[in-house]
Length: 88
Image 1 (cartoon, rainbow, N blue to C red):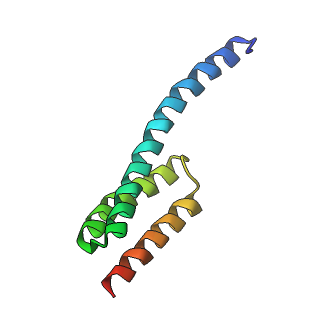
Image 2 (cartoon, rainbow, N blue to C red; image 1 turned 180 degrees about the vertical axis):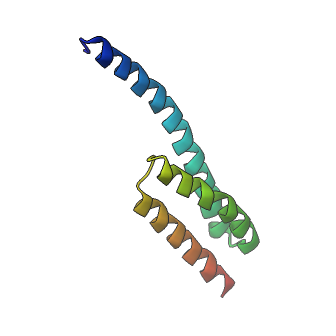
C-alpha cells in the first residue's frame, strides 16, 4: 500500500492510465481481428479496407507504448503478406 502522498497520487494515475490503455488495446485488437477475419474468408477487398484502418491503429498503439513498436511492425508486415497472398 502506498504510504506517501505522491505514491498515492501515482497509484491513482496508474489506475486511470490502465483504463485508457485497455480501451486502446481492445480497439487495436478489434481492428486486427477484422483484417484476420477478412483474410480467413478470402475477401481481398475487405481485407485491404480493414488493413487501411488497422495499420494506423497498430502504429498509434506502438507510439503510445501499448505494444512495442517492433510488435506492431511485425503484425502489420504479417497481415500485409497474408493479404498479398490472397491476390495470387
